[in-house]
Image 1 (cartoon, rainbow, N blue to C red):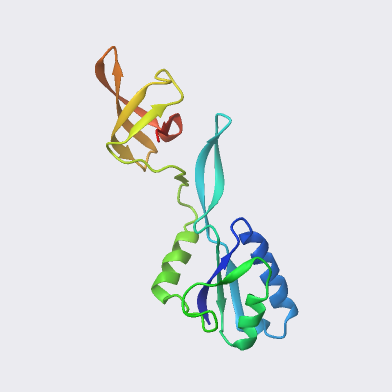
Image 2 (image 1 turned 120 degrees about the vertical axis):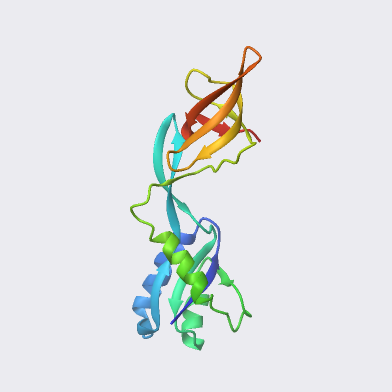
Length: 176
C-alpha cells in the first residue's frame, strides 16, 4: 500500500473522509485500503477575548489515503462525491507520494503531547497591534519571538520613546 493525495472541494474534507470510509467498508476491496486521513493540528486562537485550542487543517482541500492502486480501488475513490481527483501523475494513473513525504506528514499529525502552536506565526521586524493589556491600541515592532513560551519581545513608542515590552502571542495581532 502507498499513500496518495486526493483533492477535495474545500470545506468538504471531513465529508469526503466519511464517504470514502463508508464506500470502502461496503466494497469487496476493503483489504486494499488503509487509513483515510484529513491532516490536522492543534492551534491556539483568540475568539471573543478567550484563548481556544482548535483543530486546523494542515492542507485545506486535500485528503490522504493509504491504498493499493488498481482499477477497482481507483474507481471507488474517483466516484466519491466532492472529489476532483488525485494529486500527481495522470488522471488515469495517479502517482503516490514518497515515503519521506508521507512520514513527514504523519509525524506532524502524530505530534501529540506537544503544546499547540499559535495560529499566527510572527517574525522579527514585523509590525503588530497590541489588542489586550496596558498597551492596548499601541503599535509595536517585533524584536524577538519565543515560541517555547508563546511570547513576543516588542518595542512600542510610549511618549515618543521606544519601550521594550514582553507580551503573549494572544495579546497582539498582525497589521496587514
